[in-house]
Image (cartoon, rainbow, N blue to C red; front, top):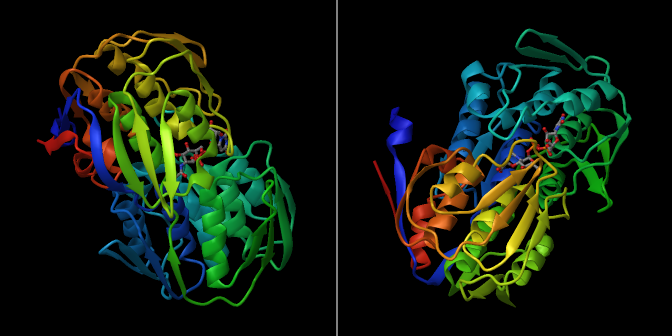
Length: 422
Ligand code: EPZ
């Protein structure tokens, strides 16, 4: 195994959780916001920024582009006055496919952007056709030669962009590119995730005139005078859902601080059906569960405000030890069930049927050595380990570090026996 794979998180399962955990800033909000810092040629401070490998990788890209960019005490600082190149380094693109978000931002700032095509990943092919269609609608010239993308923004014009699917990344790229276009651009069929709204909120703090109607239509009145921005990122709803699934799996009574319940309605609905009790206060929630899911549960992933695909694996983990027969349908990615074979090593009964899985609840799960295949699969294996008898070691921890800021410590704060080794 290479160095990365030898690391593992060891979890001793089988005991209820209790304690307090704080939800850190949202990975999927901070990444596009960091890309947007290239737009204002000024200082940007992003508060409650989680210390994630994806955040560090994005700051490395910003530094390679010529920005002064660093992370300190939960804050990201980016001064984008001096950008010296329009090319995103090859090795960074390979490390993190979501760097494609720099396409629109760099082209907007410099008039051009160059990067290698983002690879696929363990969730599927991850094409970027909608990104390219949206940028071309704004007048961007985009050439693909082999593995590289070259984007030129010489004749930008406002457009009415219609996305055929509410792609989060394509929406973000289109918004960032449209900020450099004189006139009003509309994007219909846009993604409505809370992270998109947080990006628009940050852009308005830079001076952009960008607004959403809350129903999938975004309007951008481009070429505004810009200035420095200071922003606090929204809480990470996927981290909150991950921890809630942990309580459902092994039972307990915990408090999660820094919560936006209005960002999680579809998740709370399913988790209530799974027996969780939520008691909300100021910006915290008390989560109580017996550790024994009863009844048959059906879940299907949909674009926001539907049930999030990023919660699919952890929800599955919480259904493995239960009394019912459950079904999960994945409508967003074509290959997001790779974690199934790892769950089966712990004694789970799962039948894949096309883009859905049927889960026959097991009386008990047992600890095992398992491998994270992607970020959310790794978190889901930790969730399943909390409800399993004995010790589980989750290898390939580097996947988990992309989106969770010290998950073992967060779980330990909730009373779990979780430690990182190797
Ligand atoms: C964002 O990915 C998130 N990543 C994902 O979170 C999340 O699962 C996804 O949105 C859906 O909510 C970040 O925000 C960094 P999409 P993104 O474009 O933008 C297809 C995590 O675990 N598609 O909404 O790549 C695509 O293949 C990650 O935190 C096209 O066909 O997602 C997928 O099947 C995983 N053509 C579907 O649309 C395109 O041009 C949704 O993708 C673009 C996308």
